Length: 309
Ligand code: SF4
Picture 1: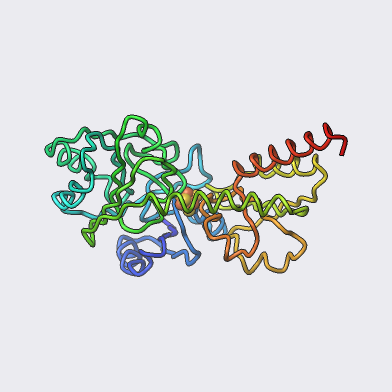
Picture 2 (picture 1 turned 180 degrees about the horizontal axis):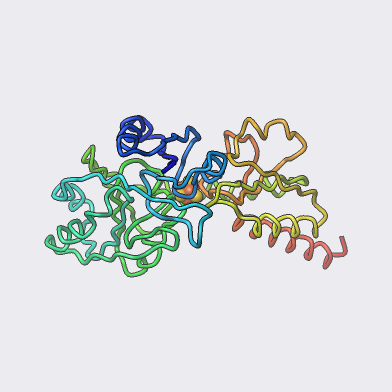
């Protein structure tokens, strides 16, 4: 069988080892060298050109709904942790009795053990389910639904995993404690989450002054949002702005730099791209914030009309 192996950046160092193993089994093996940010990012184009019979995608679980043009096998990368390490979180929870617990795909196989541990220490543990994430308790950078769906009944949120990318997806008002199982450290993240929210809102103020908009459309299979891009263009056109849809597989600041005419970017791709707007040098709004901007513009114009401006 001809197979294309795809690894996220952190696992590419293991690629040759896996490739050798599949070759030994008699397969013809290709490695995808494209950047891979998530399970949304399947190398379908490369597989098509290579006439591969299958993609084996490492490090993530299924994300895409519906049929794909080529079979995709997902190989998760499970990291075992010492569940007892969660004792480091307990003193931070104070009197908080009910906890919403969430983690990443690397640790979700131990979620039941984590829950048991917290329950044994007198906590009530809630585990929700996201929309895009496959498994209860799992969060993605674009899907904090596992927390959102239960947070109203929780006193605090406990996230288990490395790094800040995933917990910053948790747009919650409740205290968030991130436990890093490798470093065995706990960090309270309310300030970071609030700052990110404030930055996103700040982009609306900057976008309000703009007249020319580039609407970013990614052709990555799990990020492609033609309906969203067309909606954005229609709404901006309708209000007399200049709006163009700009398509690329990977939306790169460098590639956009020469489109100097555009003053503001509307993001229909990975919603976390808008966390890095400094790199793009222009305000960037996800579609929910574009909706807010349009409401502000409509309100201001309506107000202007009433005053006879
Ligand atoms: S859309 Fe963004 S956050 Fe969601 S899985 Fe893809 S890369 Fe991750």
